[in-house]
Length: 360
Ligand code: ATP
Ligand code: MG
Image 1 (cartoon, protein in one colour):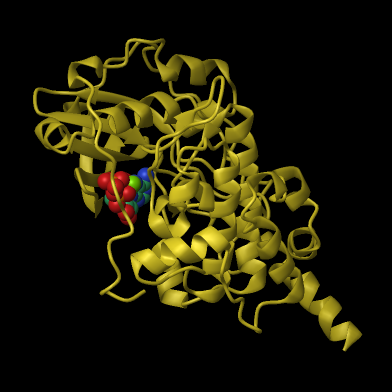
Image 2 (cartoon, helix red, strand yellow):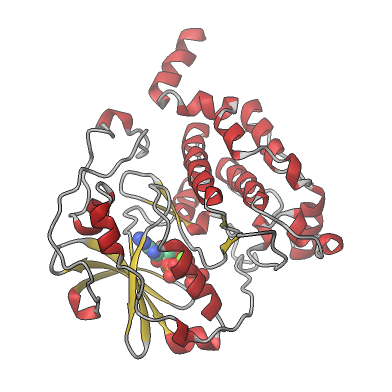
């Protein structure tokens, strides 16, 4: 990625009073977790270790075939617990966002490791990001999927808001991609298959993410992906959305084409972004990267070139996702059955390599 490229983040201006963000008043997630068996361990148990379901031999390239948390080890905690900063030991800084910092933290009573994200109320107000923050809390705290970063709870003091987040031990996918330049087809397929699983879950709950890109995908301790950053996501209870938001490189034609801006859009925006993500993971740069005006024009026509080193199966899937007409994009269920996913995800990499060497 070159430094002269404009910031991929373009934030939208909205207003909503911050006082609406109270300390969690709905039934505490700890209570829900205690009643939901395995999920409880991710909230109140110690940091997970490799489990029976994910055997070491399954993990190649740091990526497991299956990643389940261990069976719950319940440490008794008050069910309606009111969190405050003193309950956490704060560790190293994990990163810095636009509106705050994220730290590794340990809840003193249980020893539970988490990431504590701190946002300053006045900065959020100045940036008019209240609505995004509220959305992030409302949406993310109700999601439970192994490939979606969990927001366990939140609390606040006079100046700051704190998010208690699942700790993603291997950091940002973007950094992994920068280090490796581009991923092997096998590795990219593992990530895309996990994204499809996360998106099926989200869309099933009528949530559109709207901001899929490597910067918003974290990597867990087993190498599994954790979709995060729900500041732009929306519930779609009844219909389609008209607001333009998100990041230019990953925006679909229905959101960038000025002639189509009055048209509404739906969860198929995430299918387009998934296609852009797949391209970027395999090629090392986004398909429409250019000066903003050109990016916009090229997106509107799905004008891209897929390099020859990308396999025919991967090329086929990218072309079936990056389709201008949202209704013609390959649906999530079909992606899971696509030959590229089947080839790389139904057998491990070593098995695939054995097959290759046998046939050659
Ligand atoms: P924005 O303010 O637009 O959301 P951002 O996504 O960069 O920007 P944060 O979500 O605050 O900001 O995160 C900042 C950085 O901290 C991330 O880029 C990531 O490297 C790290 N980080 C955030 N959450 C976690 C987590 N749960 N586990 C591990 N690292 C994290
Ligand atoms: Mg973030």
